[in-house]
Image (cartoon, rainbow, N blue to C red):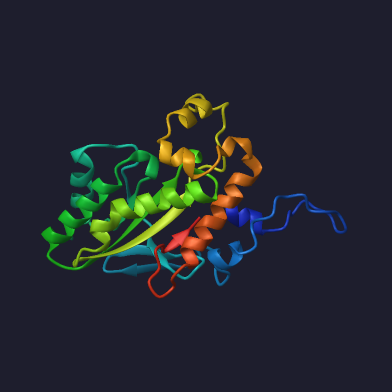
Length: 231
């Protein structure tokens, strides 16, 4: 929790002396409400049906042990997920991302696993917004596309799906050897580029607008929430 990008932004700069201005960037106004304020993430560990959970700062619980299929594609994804959530393994947390392009395969694997188990399972999926989709409208688009891909699992009678969404990066860092910020922007689908401006044009603002988008989605309908948590 201490290393969480947004959690750190919510804390005052410990190095700032009394009377000095804290020059750390401030999180958007509603961030504290969306993150919750009753507990620090990971401060409570629970065991239910042999699965270890922790409690997030918004009161939601999430398994501590999971399976990542980020950047894996093809039929293997659904097979991995299906095998993971069976009763003798009880891996109920799956990590992926919008950029991985496999969220529909994750949904299929969850359904297959639940049907093999023959009972209702609560499965948590962490997905992420890539830096090409920073900015308010692009982030909303990314999240809604993720939710659409996961929709078959969300609507399945044997599945209770909890979706957690993270901002994967606060911006594109061109100094990273694998990052090609200009080319990745150029290769985006036209509807994504039309949704909002290139985040590289306002790198200090784009992630804040993305966070506002996540807040709005998180708080949209608390009786039937789209998202279990954001970060």
